[in-house]
Length: 422
Ligand SMILES: [Zn+2]
Image (cartoon, rainbow, N blue to C red):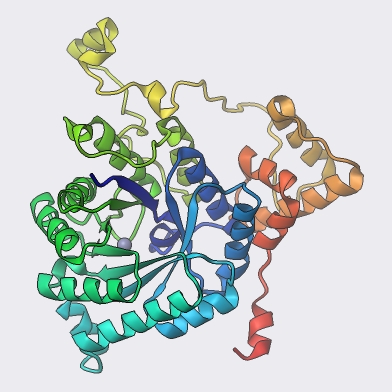
């Protein structure tokens, strides 16, 4: 019986969204929180994009140090051999890749404008898979962009060609959010049966069905005899109307009527980290969590009407499907209403020591000497330049614990490669 894995794509689909973005430290924090939750894989960025190089390499180092473990870090690139070459030139340590290409007639004709056809797309994709294999890439997913507007026989042909060349997973992308739970179920099942590769479901919310489609697609893949991988983003942030929300997908998998009787997560997810990751993403992206967001919205456990309030006070199960404690909610949240010292790009040593002492109440961070404190402060200033807002406690602690990695994350050197002439 196949199982369900979560692949979060906040650091790829989430950050490529119009009007949204994260600093490299914020992306790293997302990876750390996903790892704490037990998420199988983070699609952590774009290996051929130059400003990602230091970030990607620093995160690979965190994986080697056991800080980002057991989560897998996978890069997203175009399914082109030259992109694979560039990936291993810039981030040689990378072990997992997803290779993406458009498969629908609409996109092949609409993007290549007659210069390439369906056969060329498969040829380019298998050349990219071959190249990734030649670098001993441990897992290679192939992405059928706009899969839901692609005819099934071609999708199967595409998947079989990928498999023959050594791809380990096929990503079915409902890029425009066009599927419904019934259609995606049938397609995922057919792909699982015919291609016989694990199927990844990448769903968007243009018709409000990203979460429903994700679990229907997972059921299809498993009924077709394969494992299912669901793509999510924190708070559902992603292109246009967004992606399938991480917390909502997990809740749907583990709490919806009878689903877990047959369809289960391969790795248990620690839902009690939901509140923390959702709040961090909201702060980092500067986007409020919608009041009615499943599990983490301000109203997810709020009751006002007489009948509901009375019912929930007598027994929460009367009007709540799951408890707020399960999501890590319920701790009092302290908001400073008086004097506040926060980090900034022009912070000084005295304010910085004050902030670190306040945090250290719980975790005790001490600096060897003034020089070390000064060095960490300097990194905190740079991190503030990148984020343009005060850092959260976990970011300050991360910098204090891993100053060398923080330094790499904060390094931006565009002139290096311009001088190379590459
Ligand atoms: Zn997408």
